[in-house]
Image (tube, rainbow, N blue to C red; front, side, top):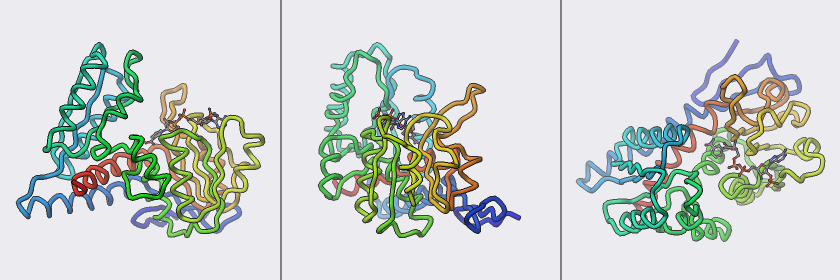
Length: 300
Ligand code: NDP
């Protein structure tokens, strides 16, 4: 029998060491986040004020980027925000792109600016990220926001790590004193995830490609986040019984199926909680982008 709640599904028969394994339903939780934003935007509109506006820039025709961008604009429309999609050819010069960003930085009607990555090779991504006004940096990648996160200041937090925290919060588990391992140390996922869990008083371990004996490091984790980009890297024998597993990875199998970094079949036999791919972290990233846009609007 499968018991359904608002945000997770209990599968009592699957877990071996724990009584029940619960799937954390990122789709449902992201919907709740988008509905929160939608309600706030409706209240802004009801007061007769200007609505928040998100501007998304895409350069070139990378099919994956086009899907992400479309979903971001669709989510903005759902929340009732204004959105602008600027599509630039792959041949656009770095100077032209920076010029467009400067224009949007100066536009009082634009609250959030997102440049979809990756960019074509002739454009310096770091320069582009730095050029976006920190006050409109809805991705939370600008050095001021990165510094703010590490210094414990009130700032824009990157969407995927913020989404990971929201998924963890949905379990009701207090992170204080728990061992929290993140596999992956990128600036956009691994490092901010580590800092956000440190802020909740977890004992944090960051693992990476040079980590010796990854399996035994992962087995220490009460909370295990995988953000690597290697299908099935985390297997059931690497998981502590009852652990919470959040799978950030987005990979494709040779058959073209979407999968995470976590081998769901073996890990779900041991974990207490687990996110699926798709339907876990992915939808949260977009929902938290909406939250960040609203935040930038409100901090003006
Ligand atoms: P990066 O490639 O920037 O970083 C990957 C990290 O994994 C690196 O720190 C690397 O270590 C580490 N790593 C690589 N191989 C191993 C290994 N065998 N054992 C342990 N660690 C390893 O990736 P991102 O952080 O950008 O993304 C990670 C995954 O998350 C990808 O699948 C990506 O598609 C997905 N993603 C999903 C999002 C979502 O919305 N759901 C958003 C962003 C990313 P080292 O530093 O030593 O090289």
